[in-house]
Image (cartoon, rainbow, N blue to C red; front, side):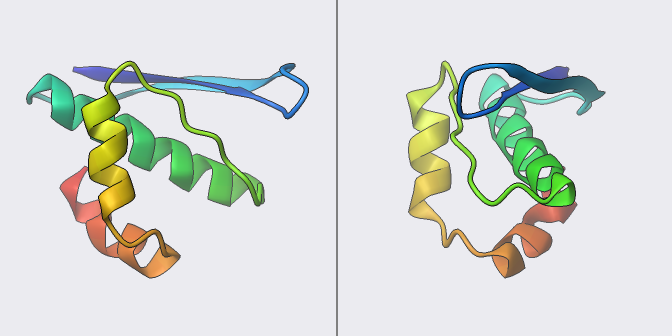
Length: 80
């Protein structure tokens, strides 16, 4: 499975994109991995605000249910 990510700025202009291999798994795992990778990429770019869009509302709800701190992000990095 692969996760493809596209980044746009607040005005909707293209700001970057990448694709990463995430290995075998279920579609929900791929969606969650894509969200995690996008957050890590945004953090590395120094972006303070991130709007995540996904075709899986369950993946968004699953992520929103967790604590959204950078510490929990680092702890969950081993899942990817």
